Every structure is written in structure tokens, then in C-alpha cells.
Image 1 (tube, one colour):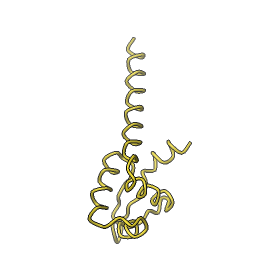
Image 2: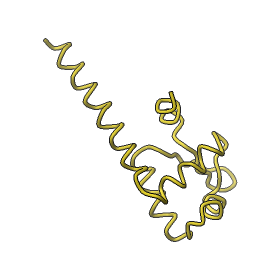
Image 3: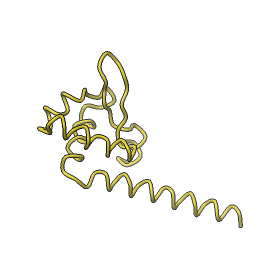
Image 4: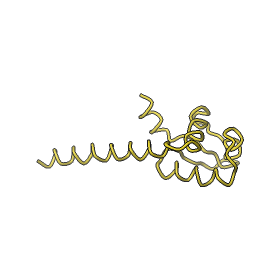
Length: 96
């Protein structure tokens, strides 16, 4: 019975993760940011370039990006400038 319970919890968590990810894209600005990052690929883009590409003002971009990061749909990394990129596991998992 323990294996069945673990399986159920695993499926439930996968479903919850998928729902959280999809909900994070259910807003025009967040979807625009995510699309720009998917188009850029693993190299990502700086926040300024995403803001220009999507037309989202920098002030609003920060708030909007935070919502995507909370859902693990995007990742940030520090290079010479902060770079934003799509969450690799998610883009592979949901593009199949």
C-alpha cells in the first residue's frame, strides 16, 4: 500500500506543478516574457532586452518576472549582467 500512496502523491505533485506553471502563463505580460525567453533559448536575455522586446516597462517587468520565477518557469543567473532564461526542465517537459 505504501507504493500506491507514494505513486498517488507523486502524480498529485506533478499535477500541482503543472497547474502552477500553466497558471503563471495565464497573463499576457508573463506569457510575453516567457515566449521571449524560449525564443532566446538557453543563452537567455538581459532584463533590459526582454523589456524592450516585449514592450513591458522595467518597473512592471520586475513584478511580472517574479511571478514566473516563483512558478519555476524562468531562472536567473549572474554573468557580467544578470541574465534571465527559461527554466530548462520545464521547457523540455512541457514542449514534448
